[in-house]
Image (cartoon, rainbow, N blue to C red; front, side, top):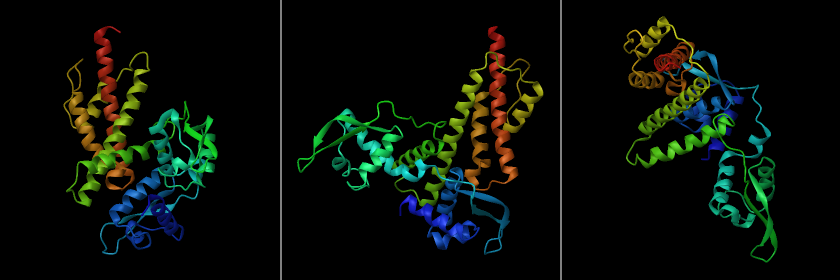
Amino acid sequence: MKKGSRRDMILAALRAGDMTCEELQEPSGLNIAQLATHLSQLAHNGYVRRLSEKRANKDGGRPLTVWAINEDFEPTPKERELPGKRRDQVLSALRTVGDKGMTCEELSEHVSLDVNSLPSYLINLERLGFVRVLPRKRRNKIGRATKVWALAANGPEVTADSRPADFWADIRKRIAEYVKSKSENMSEVVFDQVFRDFEIDMRDLVNTFQNRLKQKQLPVPEVVSRRAVFDACRTLQIDTPKVNGLVDEVAAKRNKRQLVRVYHPDATHVANDTTRAMYEAVIAAYETIIQYNDSIRSKKNGT
């Protein structure tokens, strides 16, 4: 089953009424683990939302999260016209041939679009700056001159800031491929857990990198109070520093990653106020320690 059809089935079921993962199993044809992953991604992309209420499961166990359609979300024209998988196939095929380019006939052998649908699809990609038409034409199999398409010289770059949904969709795809290549005999349950942990680590790494860049742009690191440092060390469960001493960044980073995996919404698929507050506190604590260490180093270097 294709990802797009899974998304459509989940959204169609939720349009009929709010549901938990357990209730969504039958209409979607997916198990609870798969549904939890898809719903988290749909929530990240704005299609669905978690309700504040909880609902008891069939066995009377712990209350389950209730999911609903996000009525305020409206896909952009680009999202409606250019599904990510097809776009990636087209761009990947064009990337392999470089400036040589491909005709629609040649492209149809590499993508999941027929030769009749490709011209309008490529025009949309051209309008968005992904591809361009080469000045020369090429004859097809029946001898007719047709347009040759190639990647745009300065096409839009997919980054965490420019198009977050596309950026993380590409990262998820690459993570899944890497984990699968290393886990031939791994069960589906274990694979889902490893995949989820890997994704959480990647998101944490990108967020940390972006925060460090913002801090480096400051001319002088802000002074951090001893109380703030002690609170941060307590949150990350590490030793407090001596006067004018540095905090152990290795231990801080190690403990931060462990705690992020515990409190991150994607780890447990539970986004209540308590776990969210703890997750934000862990991130803030690590940033405080980095900022404190930078200010101490700057002070010792006389800058």
